[in-house]
Length: 226
Image 1 (tube, one colour):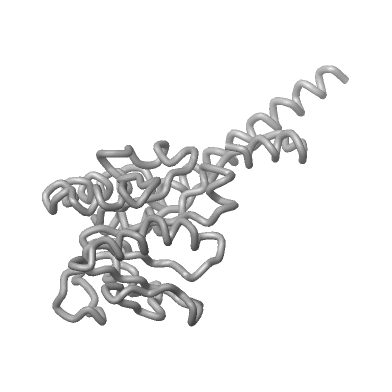
Image 2 (cartoon, helix red, strand yellow):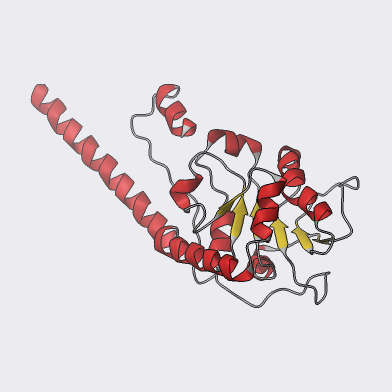
């Protein structure tokens, strides 16, 4: 993405490799749903994230607008720093703080969870939020805004759903529990196959060994030239 290009072109970095977020399967896994302010009502769509002004427009489009269109459905937001003027709807419930240890239970309390990327990350592309990996490892289907590179991490339509408009969110909500369950299971399989902390550690070691090997070869070549 643009970040790697800028590191090469603006900072003249000789070797550039990405190291993305990851999950620990021992921590991020399916668990019992958390008890929410909605009581016994099933949560149709959840969103976990601290309030951020640069996410608000996308959140309104992909979450708040669909909530207003679907008064018979139940929505849940978890996170801090939401201002008093936030445009709550009667069918949106709120958990003001979800500690990391409770992320699994939060995700598992809903049939679908939304990811909204902060604008600078979306503009750069190839910047997956760690929460996509968390939710996927829990087997919970993810509905995400689109950014360049998303399809490098999860396959749209099979392992993740993409929303660019309120209508896309509505379509995802109407997918049916069986299809959403299939997407969640496929996402979990992809997360465990490709996005664990162990895999990322291996990628880091490989990058360091490659750099060391190239540096050694350059030293030898330099010595021979001298």
